[in-house]
Image (cartoon, rainbow, N blue to C red; front, side):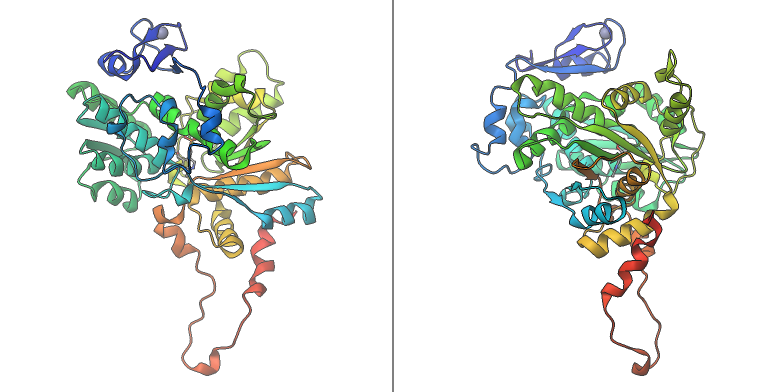
Length: 440
Ligand SMILES: Cc1ncc(COP(=O)(O)O)c(C=O)c1O
Ligand SMILES: [Zn+2]
């Protein structure tokens, strides 16, 4: 089908590609230069967006509220369970903490991706759009290499659309990940090696059988899906945050947010735009390492191209175990341009973060989200936040994906034999201890 709604423009050579039909036919690359990073351009611009975010179009059922700005032609192909229209919460306990300990007057917002219906992660939005796009283009089989969340979300939404999925996971992937794919009758290949080997085998499988493989962090379906976050913030808040904090693996999140911002800049719907604070766990932080080195050297010529590649990173946050940061040139540009930061958070503290958040807000966050909230503490500690700023923390996942973290959150249990050992208590007495690891 010839696309009148949108086109892809190759970001390397400017060649125009006629949407997903041609994109899949060409093996998901630019036919002129083999480039894989394309920009999705909508023929009719964003004229309807002000109405959509003013809620005059009614309260949204899902991110497909923004159908006009997604790379899909026919609403009948939508595969959705109501994802992407999740609340932005106000986390006063973190504001109080910043004020008491750092004398900073912040607004702290939590973007509640744990409320997404399928996997309780921010991958649901990406998977809903990918499943819809595959359905529209008649693709019956798909493959992906994954350390966790994306595979689980794809497995769910592709199953809804009746599309087969093969997932390549590294040998140390958690049982919960394997189960979250296999339970839908989607196939798992547990690769006896690390994530890089899983990606390599997946690519070989893809070309041997001509089965499209997920295009990773710059996949246009994933970027377009996550771009809708910007529209949701404008719809719910009427402004964009000054600071956006997210746990970082490959960076689809920030790349997509920036795309959303660039797409609608001309509409003048916001005054300020966020700087990006991207947080890596301490045992897998190649982008932060590269950034620190570049800072030390004064951002000398070619700095964005210099980054380490970590073999088999041993982080205990498997979702963030991306040791080969191929997207660093894109992300470093974004962070540098917006006055942001790459930070590292001590991952040994992720359980402490999850306990504190559950204690104060009743939200049970997952391990990668604990790295993001940890990044907030690290940003305070390193003087990266300024008084008056509105800080958005992306709670990228809930606990549902990580039952092993929930077990580690146990801290109030006492083993008893008789009622004499059972005394009344006040939960507030735990508070001081919970904050202890984060005090300056
Ligand atoms: C909960 C959560 N947070 C953060 C990330 C990192 O996302 P990004 O691709 O934007 O680096 C992921 C996935 O990799 C995730 O599932
Ligand atoms: Zn090109």
